[in-house]
Length: 616
Ligand SMILES: Nc1ncnc2c1ncn2[C@@H]1O[C@H](COP(=O)(O)OP(=O)(O)OP(=O)(O)O)[C@@H](O)[C@H]1O
Image (cartoon, rainbow, N blue to C red; front, top):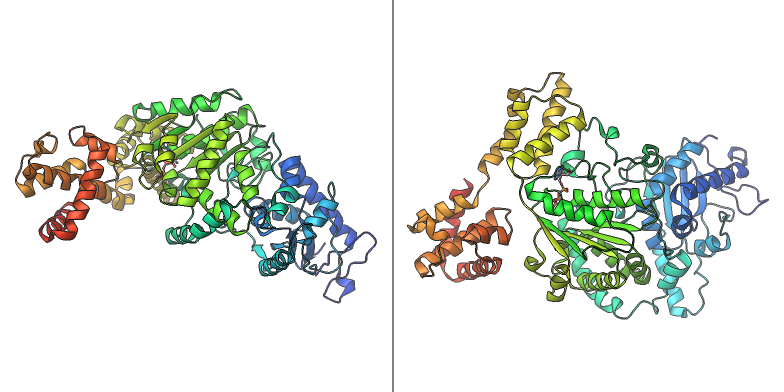
């Protein structure tokens, strides 16, 4: 079959192929297209399993296959987005097997596809002759005329196809959608049950629609301003970007190597998984190096992963710590481990940002029922970077209900955040207390020994030679977090490989010049205390003392404020450095100095000056 020719998808059995090219001689035999589509569907069914297939893939209707362009219809925008983000790459790849010249795969909202998909359960829907079906409102009973008209309008607006261009997915919903890792024991709502019902509008719960819509705008704006989806959903930046020589050899413990490679191409996917991959295959318990700073978090994560079905050791498990210290790694490791032990368990891992974005999308498209059912039917729910939903009231509300529903059903919840539940500002009190119900495990900054062990393990994984003194140098100098440490090693290894020379100390220093300079400049709390004490002419020890005289208390508050703004330390960590004070004292100090700056120009000037000296 020549992909450069226009090929019309034919209608029901016995129809002749009628493309819009008006060139019958150039059309591929319709049966061949149909047969190819059947094969693609069979492969998808085999790879993703019956339930995922029934929920997401079966409703797909092939609309046209012309000149290397495949067009597929789906019954709702939500479904279309889901398929784009989770399956489209695979669908396209399978088409390319059938038809190597396939260049693009377009997915359109095609309401009729709902009905056709249901009619043809167990076999592909056969589109009518022509490329794209005329739009028709779904034949849903019980819908008002206004509702129908709105559905038609919305479908027409949606009909701008979302195209997966060859090789490029971009940052689409794909990276913000959750990973549903295994088949649910309970059925995932099918198109007819979940999405069909949701689109009418009247059956969207009253509580979800008005509140959600009202706040959704703000929250979307918030997301836009961040400009990107959480890295936690994708590959870990330090390790995955750029050069990565031996990725293939590092697969999750003991799993069938062919399994991952049979599935969609992204890392961390497998055929049985509903959804496309954002779990990093390298993030397993085997590859996680344990030291004093992370041993509690590691042990707790293992306990959760190894718990028998129905046993929930602590709910939730709350992992917290500074950036790049392994929270996401541990969550992925839990997911992989569960998958290995019991693939039938349904695990969702996603960032809080993704949760919010999906919630907003569901509200916007009146698919909240499907959204709720999806999240409330899992065995294990893992939400990364929970701090993201601080101040996002309606998302918090939805998450609160999801959380309660899962706890009531004795389902495991794992949450990560950059600070402890008690310190999550902008989080409702009831949510904060729920988050602290189970086990709260803190990951502390790494020490030298742990950094060195991590580097040694990475060197083994990469199968590269790095002299021990270079590793020691890196472990001494790159102290911010593990991500940065890995990035540094990657850079050095990549450079050595490119220039074809062995790694040496000079080379490492040269390649990492900028990083080393930045790390030299990193501000410590001790340095802040020293500078502030000098500035106000008090002893540095007053920073730790219990004295409350204003002459020492105010500089101490200023130092706490600066520590909060100039370092990545959490409030409890800062508190500990100031004579073991409570995090609420630090919070109070930060607020007080913020207030005072507005009305005390001298103090504001002091702070500008101190910041400038510390940052220079
Ligand atoms: N103890 C460890 N052993 C091996 N690798 C580690 C360890 N801790 C972190 N890493 C690696 O460091 C990188 C950053 O870790 P991760 O993404 O899990 O950090 P995080 O705490 O989730 O950070 P963020 O808050 O930015 O999301 C990952 O590549 C991870 O595999």
